[in-house]
Length: 198
Image 1 (cartoon, one colour):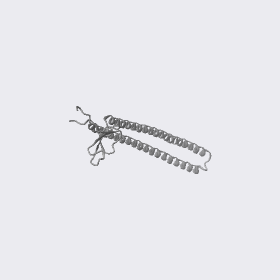
Image 2: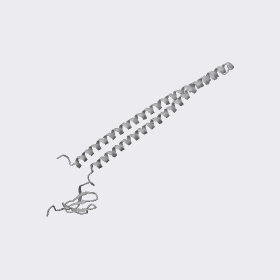
Image 3: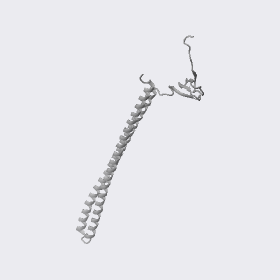
Image 4: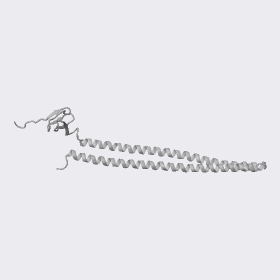
């Protein structure tokens, strides 16, 4: 008989039992099975077992897309945080400026009051002068506190910005490393799938 057709066992699911060395194919998953010495089938190849080039390309494309989105999300979060910090800085600056402006106005008012009191009442000059000096000291303390608070806020903003930059740099480094690892794995898979060089 010329050109006989030789067929191995076949089915639409994984085989339950195969003799040692006996072959079978799962037509549904396109996997090739062989029986071992204990008649237990194990898969040795096929589309359902080894990744195809199209599958590997899809995995790499998805990973790249996810990394790009993660970097974009981090950039958006950083811009939002920077805008929030800028708004807080402006608010705090305006508050400090208002305090300092009011302080100057208060000093002018005190000077005018002292002049007025001195012109009409010399009996209570000493007591009033002490009161004015006390208020001047309290004003100086408030100015010092406001200036220190402004310095603390500036330091906190700088630290937050530095931390954000470090987070973005770390994420970029991790993303590049992951992409390099994926490229290496895809190259290895392609070599395995293509059969290598004879």
